[in-house]
Image (cartoon, rainbow, N blue to C red; front, side, top):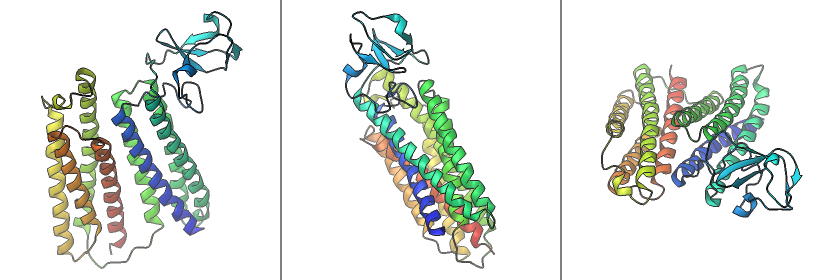
Length: 339
């Protein structure tokens, strides 16, 4: 049972990262509104593949909640009915949560796949909660945190609905990202509680504090990065997707802050290596952390000078969240090996 619990803990962590990765692809392709409603997509459980499925046709059976695009507006059917020879407003009502009314099959299916992986992640967390019941007597904290993860994933799904209903409001997107980091933290915390670490007779108070500081800096950097991304989205709307060389023609202060903060994070992690060596703590994790930071900086330089190469943005985001997870795991391991 313990092995199965560890397996589902790791699986849940992996799936959360997969949701973040596909979410990055959603942002990269501009597919955030590929499904204008939630949890269905244009009123379908399996989204449409052709505009004909969203077009009013006479003598067609429409089900309650099904959507059509009529005169550039989204309309949703009030009940199950068969259309007559002429369009009848009495059978339809305007979809008023937002005014987005376009259909792009690529955008729709990219968004749908992201949601589908989110559902699979939710199922994984439910299974994790079931297996956590074995710890209720001896380690109730593991059971409680596993149940908290279920609630957090459910809340994250609800936030996804808010993001869609708000037509990708920047603040709701930022909260959505923060919630993903919280879920990762809880799952890694659960994994660390059920893991055996080799004891090390070292005083690592200074190291714990500096690793915690580095973790806080990474969280701040991710939040700043979401604001940079919002700026890029605005530039895309104003200048178009093809004029990448103009997106950063005038650098905003948030971009300069994001760039400078990366050097601060790198410096702090070099200091972590110094402290680790000083107390004879040999850990390969810190070199993984430095490697991820180095790749992140290289990606940032490439996006600026090479005008956002394909997939550089979602990869940049994914690596940032992986960095956060590795740092959090490193922090938990230091706490457990301390004398």
